[in-house]
Image (cartoon, rainbow over all chains, first blue to last red; front, side, top):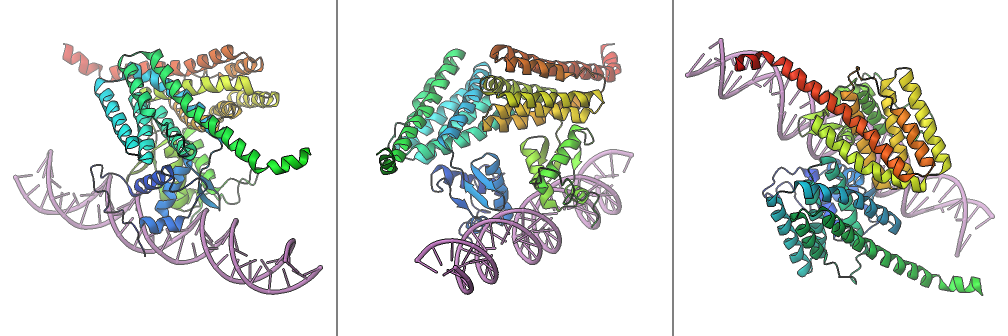
Length: 245
Length: 245
DNA sequence: GTTGATTTTTATGTATACAATCCTATTATG
DNA sequence: CATAATAGGATTGTATACATAAAAATCAAC
């Protein structure tokens, strides 16, 4: 059996409680975020098994988890592929996040402990460092973790679980539509502002900032939408030309 | 191999696309709702496999799905048990539902088609019939399906997926705290009112009704909370008496 | 040369066998 | 008699083998 990566003994860090499928799950998820597995990529169970040195059983578990979060699409009898959400689906996901983030923000303003707020700041500093040194994948992931930690602070496990799924999807979307050009992904500025509002327990300001934050994501989608639209028009311009002539 | 229930050939109805783990999933879930599997019950993989005439592989998939929805608790190396949410957890679940149902109700008021509204009415009529003939389990399930169908009408897949999980959990909670006595579970009246408000596209009225609807569930929890508190006090009254004397 | 049917191959779905872990009952010891 | 240690049994975790369905490739016919 060929094993490109032994995972049983790797990552002997602090956590140590991570089970094998967790590790596989995270590796695949990271690869998707960092675009090493672009949308639409077929995820072959046996290949993945060889890569991680585990049986298909483990791979299958990881894939169903990713499927449940809708980061990959599971097609019965036809295997799993990396999800490639359309602009419309992306908008629906952002809408769902608006709903959750509003509730989370309000809860956090009520319940946040000062120690947690410090933790938040550190997270954003790490995020900033990633973007500054050009590590986009890690940056997007940390940006997601910021929002996840907020949901944790809200002390509502069901909302947290939903947020986890939404953040995963949003990260996928950002990675998909962040086509190099728009490097204006300085979300960490807005994260710092948000933390200040929370520290001041200014609920309405915090919510407004959060909505504004999501506006930015959605705005980027709109830009890409137009771009895609233009591309399509360019591609079929000859057809259109013929038809109208 | 002993098979108490052959599922390969059963249910040859309309759907037909249901895979084996779906069927197992639904059977277990229904059993939980109908309290045939009370909270805390250990779910032995091999036993379930024999009952449904499938291997542990299928049972495991069904259990992880139930685990993801938090209807059962998966304890590593120690198997699955039916979830037994505390009153506090129940309140958090209801809170999450408030968040989702508000958004869903608003979306539905905007997007509902008349044919769907008819479908809704039929669902509630079925629900009413179940409660009238004393089939509590089926009633709770149909009540849940009403809310699920609403989420479907909202045309937002992520919200729908979250709603599915929340409705499952709420059904479990209702089943758990619906201790025979409070048969005042005539939720279908409120469902009919809600449909009217939606048909009239009266967003604020519909949302108010929905919140009111959830108030009822939460109120029932509070009652049970006090009851449990009283029970405990009754149980340990002698101890308290001795201490204070 | 293209289309359509048939075979071959590959990948997924399911069952089962083995390994690791946890629970329990028995025994030993203070 | 209570507690701790250990051995046995039972249950979950993982790997693998087999069954089934989809995809690919080959060949036939037009």
